[in-house]
Amino acid sequence: MRELNDSAPLTLATMLAIILGAYLFSGDANAESDYQDISRVNGSIEVKQGQQAGNVSTVNGRVQILDGASVGSVSTVNGSIELSRRSSARNTETVNGDIQIGNGVMVDGSLGTVNGDIRIRDNAIIGDSIRTVNGNIELNKGVSVTDKVQTANGDIRLIGSNVGGDLVTRTGDVSLQASSTVTGDIILYDDSRWWDKIFRLGRLKTPRIHIDASSAVRGNIHLHRPVDLDIEAGSVTGEIVRHY
Image 1 (cartoon, helix red, strand yellow):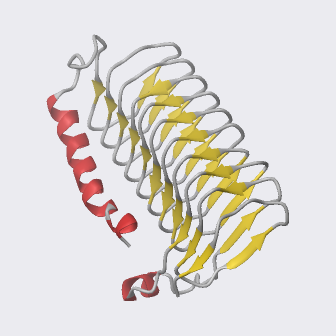
Image 2 (tube, rainbow, N blue to C red):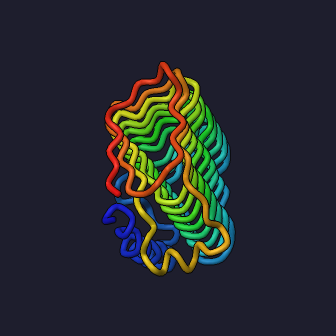
């Protein structure tokens, strides 16, 4: 269960870094570039179309990076993040909010949220991993993710996209459609811990894995709990390994 339990310390570190950064470095030039950082405590931030900036951070507010803009790391605690068409960023992190990635966006590093959905539109490139705890993840046509895609309590849907690492969830459904490819494994962990049972009362369900005939999983499918498997003839998968 280490994959899912690691999220707590990362969340605390992220929140601390965002808050300290907003107080201490507002308006400073980014040490890694000549571009100005943009940061505040309360309020939303908009980086205008085609603008270049350093790190962009707020504590209570939304962050929007408009078409063609280029920035460093993007972060907020309480707010959503949107990267519009053909924009670029180094990393993108929020705690309580969704992440929306537009067509043709390039993110050098990772995307992460704790309580929010992540949706990535066509032909975006993510250079590292995608991670949420309580939220769904959707990757659309031509999206490429270098490392893993992970959620604890949410669905993962791939529509004509490619993931270089594992697909990991615990309570959610997994769907691969339209010639999607997962180079790593699909892993569904158990949620048998007593606190999970309490919090999931009223929403008990058996997760479902659907892989259509055009899609492929190059690794194995690891099941740590009962799952409804819907693997169409013609799809490519490794072994189905049941750990329960």
